[in-house]
Image 1 (cartoon, each protein chain N blue to C red):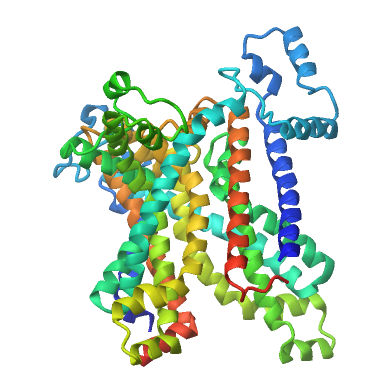
Image 2: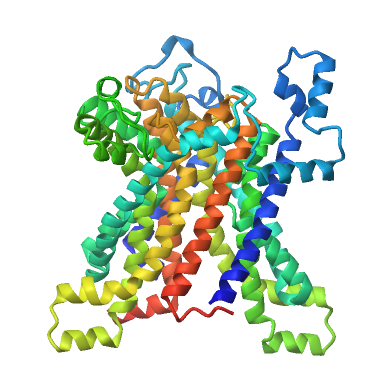
Length: 278
Length: 338
C-alpha cells in the first residue's frame, strides 16, 4: 500500500542507506580517523579525486569520511531528541486527556504558550544563554518541541477514553494509572510513531542549522551543519566542502519528509478512498 | 465575533507575559555576571558593584522582573554590550531591510506556489503531479543556508548574473544614493525616480528572495493541492462542468476561490516562520537586516541584543498568528468561535 507510491519508496531507500552508513561508519569510511577529527595537513583543501572522492577540508580531512561520520551524529541526536520529547509530551498528554478539568487546563495552556513562540528562535536564545554545545542544543530543541506530542496524545486519549473496553476495565476496578498506561496508551501510540518519523527530518534540519551558527555540535566532531559553515570561507574556490555536506542534509531531510508524507496519505481515509477509486 | 477577538487578545497578553518571563530567566542564567559582561573583563570590583546597583542586580529577583517589565513597557530593551547603543535603535535600523526581503519572498511564494498546487491537483497522480510534489517536498527539505551558498556560486561566480550579496552596489550607492523615506530601498528608489539605484536594488534582491521563498513556496503548493483536490470533488463543480463552464474558469475562479482559505493561513504562518529563516539567509547574503543583527550578536555573545531581538521577533510572530486567526474567522463563517 505505502510502497505503491514511488516517492515514498525512494525515501525509504535513502533512509535505509543512511542507517547502514551510520551503523557501519568506521568500516565504510575510507579514513575513519579523519572522520573522527584527526587532521592531515599535508593534503589541505584537495579537490575531489580518486584518493578523496569528495575532496578534503581546510585541515586536510577526507570529506566523504566526515559526511559518513556526520550521519551518525545527526541520526543519534535526532533519535535522542525524539525520544526525550516523546517521554515528556506523551505522559503529559495522557494525563491531560484522561483527567480533564483543571489539570487539563493547566497543562494545555502551558503547552499552547510554548507553541506560540517561534521554536528555532527560542532554541537560539536558550543556547545563547546556556553556552554552545551539542548537549545544550539538544535541550534547546526539546523545550519548544514536546507540546506537539502533548496535543496529539490528548486528542487521542479523549477519543478513546469513553470506549467500552476502558469502561469495562473501570467497572472491574482496575486502578486509574493501570488503565491509563496499560489500556489507553497502547491504543494511542500509532499516530505518535508517525509524528516521530516526520519529526526526525525536521530535527536533523534544525540541528544542522544550529551547527551552522556554531551553536550545536562542537569541533572536531563531524557534523553536517558545521561542515557547511566551515566551507563557507573557501566556498568560491573550494566548493566541495560545503556542497557535499549540505547535500547530505538535504537528502536525509527529503527522505524523511517523503516517507512521512506517504504514511500520512496511507492513514488518511479520505485520501485512501481516492486511491481506490482511481 | 467581538467576544472571540477579545478572548484572543487576553490570551495574547498572557502569552506575552510568559514570553517576558522566559527572556528574563534566560538573561539571568547567562554564564558570568551581567554586570561584568557589561563592563568587560578588565573592570575593577568597585565598578562592577556600581553597575550592579545601576542595573538593579542587587535587588531580589521578583523586583528585578518588575523593573524588567517596566522597561519593556517603555520600549527599553537594554543596551548592546559591544556598542552600548540601545537595542531598540538597532532593531529599528535593521527592520526595514528584513521586511523588504520577507514581503518580496512571500509574494514570490504565492505567485509560484498557488499555480503549482492547482496544476498538481488538476493532474492528480500523473507524472506532472509527482514532479510538482517532489519539487514541493524538496523545497521544504532544503537547508536554506546551503541553498543560499549554492545560488551564490552558480549565479554569481559561474554565470555572473546576480551580485553575491548586500542591498545595493557600492558604486551605485555612492553615485546615486537612496534617499531614506520608507527604508524599503525598492520603494524609495521608485518614489524618487532613482533608476540606476532601482535596478541595482532589484538585482540584489533576487537571490535572497528566492532562497527565502523556497520553504513557503513548497508549503503553499502542497496546501493548495490538497484543498483543491477536496473542492474539485464538490457537487457545484460538477454542476459548473455540466452547464459548460470552461475548465480554466472552473479551476482558477470557481474552485480556487473556495480553496484559498487554508492557503492564506499557510502563507501567514510561513511569513512568521520566515523570521527565523532570515537569520541564515541574511548572514550569507550580507543583508543588513534583523537576522544579521542577531547572528552578529550570537558570534559576539552580545546577550541583550539576542534577548531583545528574540523578544521582538516572538512578539511579531504571535501577532501575525493572531491576525491570521482573526482573518480566517472573519472570512470563513464555518469556523466555530466557541
